[in-house]
Image (cartoon, rainbow, N blue to C red; front, top):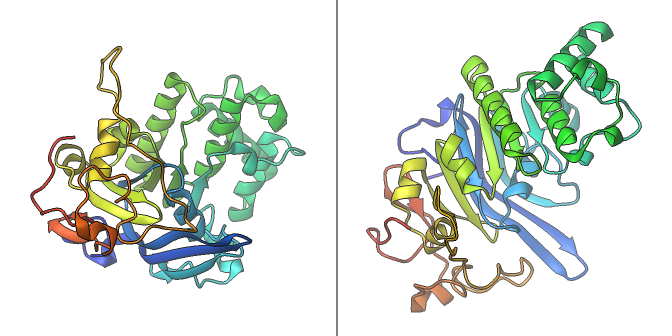
Length: 335
């Protein structure tokens, strides 16, 4: 199985299909195996949530898709409307970025140039892909800044990034990402720096994009609450590998992998106060010196003897539900 809903959705229906993606980096200390044979897909109008702890390979997977991992050794494929992004010439990939696939980065300073006004940057990005005047691009920039909750956008459009707060820079970056109504929106921790009110505005904006344009969204986050709210399908990653894939309801109510159940157990219950959370014991492994067998076995509370020596394949437990674990298929349940 090579996609989240492979049992029910033909490959031709998927807007983006990533197959057996592997990404590694050569460093002075050794080879960092950041992503190891990960596959997933997303359809028009649907949201795929990719979750996992820091260092699980979520962001590297997304950045590789849009050609932002220079110097990496990459294998696999990433088919967007039938074209492989991983083998596409740089010029073709630049044409895809923005109108085809847009990305919201976790760090807004990585997208906003400090020497140019925010509105000008949004407007120029529009003009690169669309034959409009500077005046129309500026009007669109003001409209977008207002959509993402920037107060008095007609005035703030001429500010520089350093004149925006961290949360406002995040919103400006989101405005830039959605300016061309992309077919696929990759959102890497899009609401991390925002307060609850603005988070709700951004989620509403993403939903409106989907409703109006059929935008496919890949949401990369550690926030399982956000995934529960907007994602239809979920991929759980750990140490560069896929641990579990399922639709949202199955993952939250019938999780199989001990890592998935550990993540869910560490999620505070809605409305609970003063409740002690249950963290996953230990730390993620080094991606240079990975343990043998299942990468999670040193931290797993249900480890079996073979877990230390044999790498479990990502196998189908039920239609649309796969888990990379040696435990019996019917194992698990509510976290």
